Image (cartoon, rainbow, N blue to C red; front, side, top):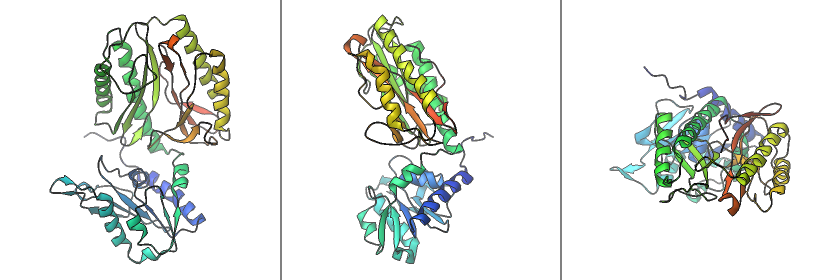
Length: 371
């Protein structure tokens, strides 16, 4: 009998519930309702498959109710009440799933709909559900995203598994990339490597597969000798994402300019590993990276330095001047400096993943950065 190393971790889910309950009590909330599949999974360990909606309600006393597709009721959850709704009629997907599961959830709450203060997600909370509450609705979504920054051991294990799939894809890419290779063919080969590595269907596959380009979906195009091939790969394993990039020299003979750009980009990772720890401002490391890459003009670095990753590809912390985040212990984040110019045909981007520890960072993507 095969043991699933990534089976539901009920204590971890209950711990996440308790951290949310502490915030609910701080904000004097009588109830929390979510209609986002990521937050239902984060709380209960249950993820509805593609094309399906789910919902959940959490009370300050710790009671968690989830509503999931009736044909997919899980055998094991970290919820106290599991209810089903009709997500399909005669095998046809309903377009009003959110209405359907909300009706089941509301029916389960009974008199709780008279709660004075209810935490919801303003970005997605359905108006037809909001009308059923006479009390004040409080936007708890920003709080949830902050709580999700700290990855528990079960979350980190799934992310490591996802990262392992990208490592296997990069290993395969090193043997496959050569002059004349077709972008779409390579895309299909790498997807197969990821599926074979994980041993199950992916919950996501992306992102950048273009040669002699800053990025984009694969094309029916043949790579040419001397071009740089940016592969920025992400895999979803049971809802948890990886996101890391490597760049390859087509023909394995990088030019002097390409080698110099590669060497300069590596200095950014050295800075991250010597600088980042809890309490450091993300804008500070973004500015330092810009300074390290500035001498490479006219080559340009004109995008974010990185971002958190977890149940969504881009989460906090944001290594980006549009946010003023601060690193915290338990953060998992990417660092993806790049340099782009026609002289580089057309540029490169390298990306490492890290976890913030008590006094520094742990590298999660310990595989080759070579061109």
